[in-house]
Length: 489
Image (cartoon, rainbow, N blue to C red):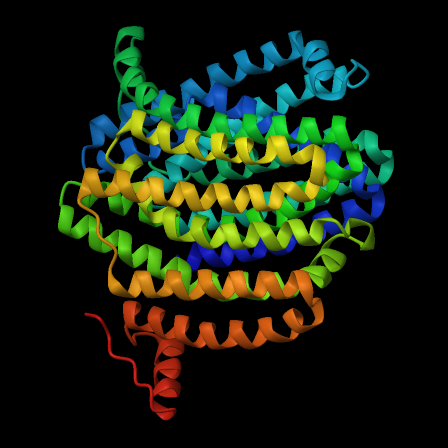
């Protein structure tokens, strides 16, 4: 978690610089256009990938001790992404005019839309490599791929935008995907070469079929999210203009980037570990509670800080032109408290290979989000997306609890309930304060974030123990203030 967390932290810094430069160079309309291209890329990538990146991680983690089987899985995983990516690229190019008309109302951007298909192929090749690294728990290499790929892709992409302006956005996307795939390939080439001989079509089919069957649920779930996001952004751009789409993209980008950083750091190792113990109910429930507690303890204080300081964060990361994104960000941040709590539970469904249930969970949030947003968009404008997001995540959280309790006998530990109640309650109080007295919220949020951060850091120390130089110093600090840390071990 620390390795991937550090890599994701650097990645966030790169993302912040990237979006700041984009916002200054292109304004809200450029950010909105980029968000539409990126959502199209994600949607097609999800479809063409058939979820085999996620199912591949599970298969590789489950067969690490069986060299012959692992070798065959590796070969099929790479070949499948190559073939499926090539088919996706061809499809997007052939349908470029229809897709452009659907997204923008005309075919003026058809060529750029067609080139998104090339980015899809590159992105899938990169996803196959990173799935291999994660499944084999090469966490350090995975962290290097994250940082180096993001840095190289950002520098090259920003140069293209600086030279060509808005027309350089498509090259920005292509270069990001190309850099990620190339860097990932560099590290996977260091792995021991597969020992299995070349597979026949029948053997390939027998390995590909179960991976694709489970992966289809991941794919459809991810596709539902990407399609919903594309639908919402398209509706906002057509009804309210590209500036409004840019405001939505700014708020969405900040919340998803931060929460994605934390969840990515935990998930890189958590998913394979949970897969190994998922049949042991006691161990699985304990691990799920531990991950939920870590997520809330580490992420909760920053979410509280984000609610109060949202006006300054938006101006710093984007510009003063993105004012409407402030309220959006504050509402979405409240919803993300429940996302942190529910994330660890959702992985249990994936780890147990319950494809249909996983799909139901993924689709449920998107349906709830659209149902909340659609009727209110015309009356409240883009701001309506904030409350819609939060309400949808709260309802999704309760649905997921019911399912995981029935499947795994899950029960929340008292500490988990306490952390969730603490951060959800404070987030709602800060939101109400931010909407009525922004300056008071800005003053209160650092105080509350510091207090909950001290409590959360102590929770982390209890979980990991006092081993290590930093952990030892922090343990001594808590002892000196009369609040000693006693390891849960």
